[in-house]
Image (cartoon, rainbow, N blue to C red; front, side, top):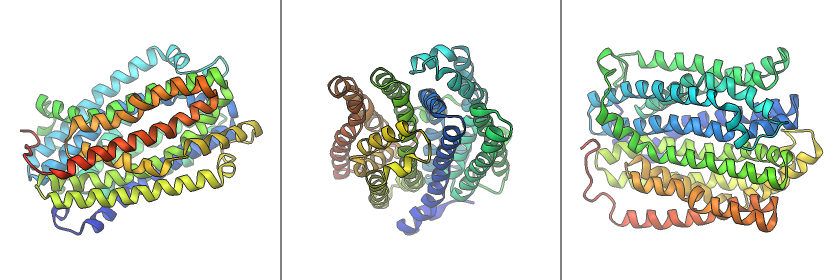
Length: 450
């Protein structure tokens, strides 16, 4: 089965067809993360929420290594299919497996060896460390499974099977949500139970994805000859994946700085508040990532086929959809913040602090969708350097300086205000860069692996 419709079908119809499964999958994943936090907050307590927030940088670092392989490989697969180079697309698939196993093992061993010092550095206190440690020991033990699941799911989506990729994600999320209360409450395992539920659900989802890729009726499938390490494929895949990798690494360091500033100015309760608003913001960001994942195979295929008008159309439509989504998030945060945060905790002080922080954090949220789409667009057509710059601009160039300066002036509120301030500057830079690109788009392009 060859997804030739990517080069011929109406762009709006294609974006709906490819983005909706990704959006459903991203929404389900985000809702799982929210439900996970809700179960932990309501069933274990506010300090467990703070402990979970301390693990965010390490989780981001693990995700970073996964995206280094997965995103680059998915982009290559889409572009190679557009060029009708099916043999090379399958070779990329084989390298996805080998790279994910190697990198997943590396992260697992390193993380487990230095877990407690890492968590202390990330903002843990003597009170929150036990919760963070319990959770991350299990998550790191299943790191190879997580990397393989996400990497292969992205390959399935890029090959023109978005509904099957969505099904795998929904299977993982559904199992996770069902298993969470069983392990947390029924078996009395607390925060450790939430981590076990996550790993078990990903094992089952990986088995589902593997079954799909064993079907030789599809243009992208497993076979013996594809499992041969190719340095050229690996380097190109890792090169394209560098942008989201560095973005997640930057996110890791940013969250470390946020946690440490919050610990200094507000203590464990402020970190707990950040843990709550992070989950809420994450939901709307992931919805936008669903749009960009839907855009990726369409833009990649048509870029490979040199149909540049179609590439522009899908970019424009994706920006519109993403902006609508982030505007809805902004409205919820500003109108009913108290109602939203009360889902996570019954602690009055934590609720008040979280609602206040949520209003500030999402003050300029409508422009975030545009910045996310533009950054992803550069990555999915292979403009690696521009994608890296845009991916890092918000977090390294703007957010980190704001996080250093603002808290010294306004304390805990300075931490919250640094986020919308960096959103504004990053969106402005993205607007300038995409405007310049569109003026000469499609000229003097090179082959994907040439």
